[in-house]
Amino acid sequence: MSSLPKGTAGSKDPATTRDRAVFLDRDGTLMENDGDLGDPSKVVLLPHVSQGLVSLRENGFKLIVVTNQGGVARGKYDEAAVVATHARLETLLCQATGLMCVIDAFYFCPFHPEGSVSEYRREHAWRKPSPGMLQAAALDHGIDLASSWIIGDQERDVQAGAAAGCRSILIGSPHGNSAADYFATHVNEAASRILQVDAPTVLASVVTLHAANPNVLNDKVLRSAITTAAESLAERSGVRLVSLEWSRQAVTATVQGGELIALGLAAELRRTTDRWWQVHGGSTPLWAGE
Image (cartoon, rainbow, N blue to C red; front, side, top):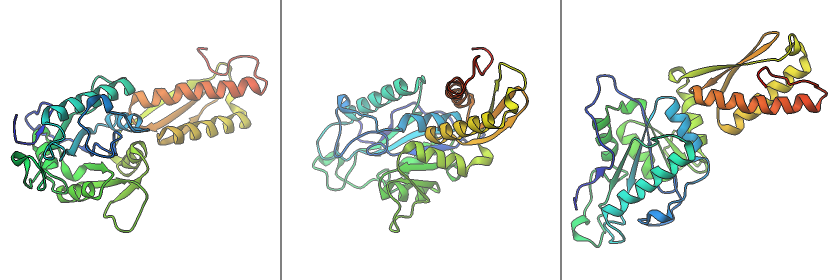
């Protein structure tokens, strides 16, 4: 068993163009854990995690977990258990998102200066609040740290990000004792904040719904109902609705994010507004193709 911290996903030679990343704390950020957890069967995703990670991946961010695992130093479990726990976390995330890959790499630090296992009983540059894991990941994966973020639920996550030159979002209520750049209640809210702040550099996608009948969208009441539904759906799903553009027979939505996000919003908007249309006297489908 290696005594060195490691990433559990394969590394690559840094590319000539450097990528942006979101570094993610594990326990209390992605999954439930009030203490040391080295049992893969006990991994439980926190609410709103999968939606946020999909948004970030759709917008070109690498996702890298950086986690202190002092339970190894305390003899609670070994490094193999950490790797197995990460494999289970990735499996659950893939199932929740429908993606083939969610986390690009896992990095963990098994050392702790007060550990009971002598092999791991020491301080280490990878242990947060030190920035070692972030810096190692940047070298392994060609990441521009100044364009990257860290999301975590502890101040040590914020401190590690600051030391590496990243911006930070602390999961929890805002308070004056933190150096975090922003606060969020969960990962999806944090992802929305990142996409809002980085708006000039993130992807935007366009999707159009075509009305079944000519001129129907000239009705001001119907337009208002569609606009209200689109804004409500975007807010609930953590998607930024950039604009709605109208013609006599179509409405075009521009959203911040990739094609998958835009198509998902359009499908739900179609269902919601068609129900409204039928309730309010529409005798035929509102949208073409139904």
